[in-house]
Each structure stands twice: as C-alpha cells, then as structure tokens.
Length: 111
Image (spheres, helix red, strand yellow):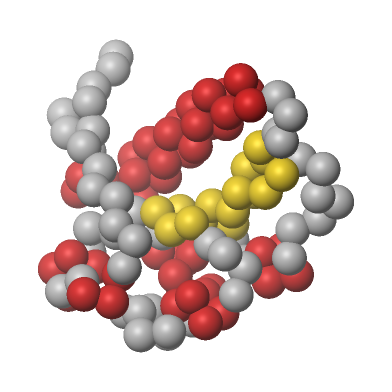
C-alpha cells in the first residue's frame, strides 16, 4: 500500500526548538564536522545515529571525503553528464528516507 508523507526542508537548523529537533529525520552531510556546530547532537556520529545521513557526490569522484566514510551516511551518486539519471537518485533517496522513518521514527508513520 502507498501513503503520503509530508516533509519540511530547512537549511539552517540553528533556530530549531527542542520540539523541532525531535522531528528531524534526515541530514545531508557536507563532509565537515563544523557543519554540526550548535546542533542538538554534539558530534556527527550522534547526528547520524539519530537521522538518516546522506551525502551527494558526482559519480566520477573516486571516494567520498574521509569523514563521510567514517559516518553512518549513504553516498548517492549524481552524473555530471547524464542528468536525466537525477530522477533515479532522487527516488532512491525518498525510498531510503521512507524506510528509515518506518524503522526508526515510527511516531511519524501514518496508518
């Protein structure tokens, strides 16, 4: 069966209240620890133990940054030249997110 989910996308988590933080389900990682300064969770490891971690990179990059390799983050590849494949990557992200929410954030699953 299928159902709809509504997500709110933000770009500055520093203004989130403690209630808002409970609703965070995914984070796009940039590969630098400073990205998480001032967040509810003190380290990137803590962030990705509480949220789905995603890192986007071009498919011609041999390996993601070292930090990404150490964190619980899924690497999704994008092609510089075959942009029509972006949809496939997008769908993969949404499947990952839906599965993460079903497994780890059951309070947000509508039945």
